[in-house]
Image 1 (cartoon, rainbow, N blue to C red):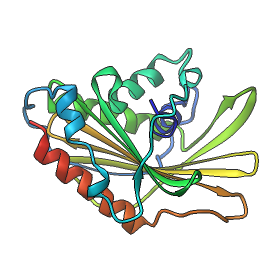
Image 2 (cartoon, rainbow, N blue to C red):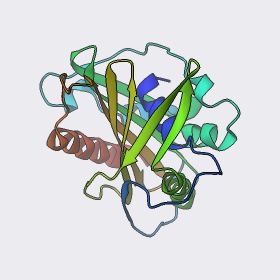
Image 3 (cartoon, helix red, strand yellow):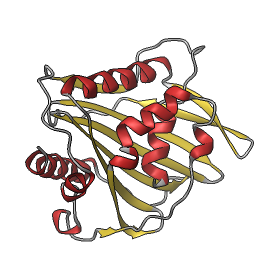
Length: 228
């Protein structure tokens, strides 16, 4: 699993039970869950992912770097479970695209399929609850405590249900900013993470909200047509 998508969900779920419940930095809309279609095969999920031809000019496919993020999930069953549920796991599919240079921006799409729409809605509800408990929290990276902030991000409803958040964290002289979208399409989940790495002084590549929305709409349309 690629670091950006996995880290996004791990960070989103990384709050503990002692966190004070507060209103989450999220924008959510939902539609009633309907009976699910058949579970999609891994091959069907892969075929429903975005391809370079579906993206605006300037994007290219980024190959898997096999960077391991298991250390973020150790000792936290719910955190690992959310990652598995939304990022697809062994039976899911994922593609990552980049623009400009090694700092991004990047867009990572993950698709997974569950037995019913109610199952997907339940997992989105679990993620929403996790977000409500920790608009900010800390995690440890190589022995260094780092702060993560979750804030509201306006985004139109896509698919049958949408959960949208922005996650930011800082390391050394860099700031990682991720817009995380979780969309229910019948009994399937689409996770889209738009990420950029900029210097703390603000210099670096940007991913315009309009560009991310255009990519998200293309992803939802393709998945909606390509999945059962």
